[in-house]
Amino acid sequence: MAPGGRPLEGLLSLVDDSSVAGSANRKLPCLFHLQTMNISKYIANCKVTWLILSLAVYLAPALSLLGQSVQHLSVTQPGGLPGQPVLIGIVPGTNGVTVTWDGPAGYYQLFEKASLTDSNWVALGARTNLARRAVVAGATSNALFRILGPAPHFAGSQACIECHQTIHDSAMNTRHAQAFSALQQINQDTNANCLPCHTVGYGVPSGFSSAAATPQLAGVQCENCHGPAGNHAANPDDPTARPRVEIAAQVCGGCHTGSHQPTFEEWKSSLHSSVVEDMNPTNRIDSCGRCHSGSARWSLIEGRPLPVGDANLGIQCINCHEPHSKTANPHQLLNPVASTNDYFLTTTDVFTDKYDPNINICAQCHNHRGASWTSSSRPPHHSPQYNILLGTVGVLASGMAPNQPASHALLIKNQCVGCHMQATNYVSETQPASTGHNFQVQSFDGCRACHPLPQELAQFTTAAISNEVQTIKASLDLWAMTKAPASLQTNYGTRAWEYTNPGTLSPGGSGPSTTEQALIPVNIQKARFNLYLVLYDGSYGVHNASLAVTLLDTAQTWVEQELSQ
Image (cartoon, rainbow, N blue to C red; front, side, top):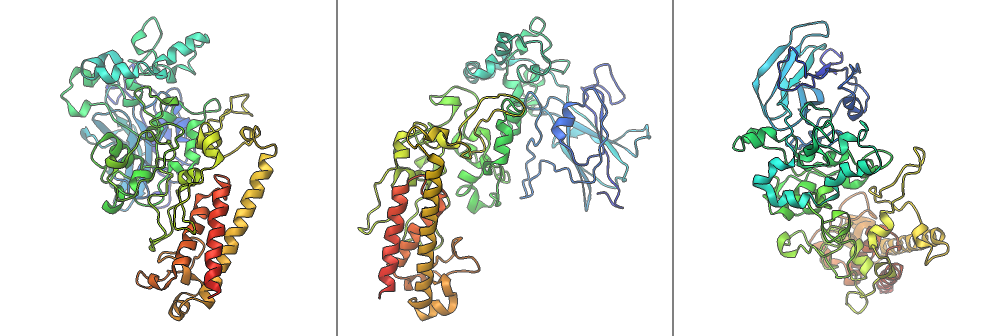
């Protein structure tokens, strides 16, 4: 809300390089009264209509609540990166109203007028804004805003060849390049609903119009993801005209969406899409960030400098898929969908020394990170799934790590993907397609070849393992209250067996300090390690039931030995 409690209004003008006053090519503007709305849906209609909406609710800009300093594309647009200005947010603050917008690379100019009936647009500064963001001081509650952006001159991928031939030739071999041909095969190559995502710049004067008039703009090309490049091709040395390198999933989400291909919606609903803790601190960006930050991981794989100030971006499409070329893996994946070599990457490993492109795509991050029972600071990370699947993590009575691979690791061809990314075809609007990008097990159909009653078996397994987890936890609590050294009992109660930073089984406070950890018997330390490995695998035995039982039985034996002392 604006000062005084009245809603602010924002006006987005979809214009080309002509004057604000008007031109034959100017698109009709869109009026936003910005309240509860699907911004992508309404912006898509802006070319032909005025829209009046209310801003009683905050319209989030691309700035992350975690302090992201880099503005990434935060709305989806059919065709990829918007070729014209798109209003993202109007947010009141202590220093004024922050107006954010998106669009291609280049200079922008923001205009304001006092109210809807006011005919006088006032320029807020010169046409020198490269940040796509401006703070407007003293805006009234009825103020409207308008944006003038760079001319969207689409040139086609042939204009990129002179400097980018290798990557151009590679990209032209992907399915994206054949997107228009796919429409022709089903006689939909003149369907205006399909063309924005199967051509370059459809709907913009310089974009695709027809196969006869603009054949060079058929198919998905460089400019779909990087924005119009005509200005850059005409003047390659102008840094302000260089097409954007935008890694946000919203670029892909403009087309990979809807009931036929709901990839973006499914990804958005998954934990992959968000960052729950600030990844920008220097002690996190290269350690935690390598798996929790899409921008940090992309930089590490690409050999680019770490994105200081830009690490609060979740795992994006480009973290799993190679956008520019086919790979040896299906769906242009960076890594295979299955492997049997053990793998883990600690937070202190040099990424380039340890990264293995031949390891399962999910295992790149879902590994135990070098977990060891000798570590007393905190439990194993919530990511040992791959090692549990291969049966290579945990500690046995012999002191050795197990070698107990699950049948699932060897018999399910696609391993994690086989269960967590089951796809279904589109049937109707009430039975839309599924691409598996929410990464949830939603069907047991693939299990029936080996398990006649797979759902019942899964329920039995998870219940049994969950009960054993609670049994061991109760035994550890009993040890803490009856057998732990008196100082630990007094200071920590049932947390006397825990790590210094206890796991989720013992909420309510800290555990024994680093020095006090030496008072905890080795058997208890090993038992808690196995316990948390099974718990933090998250499958309650489904990934590897025999290993889960072995680790928990061993843990229970160790605790009982200490209770009998």
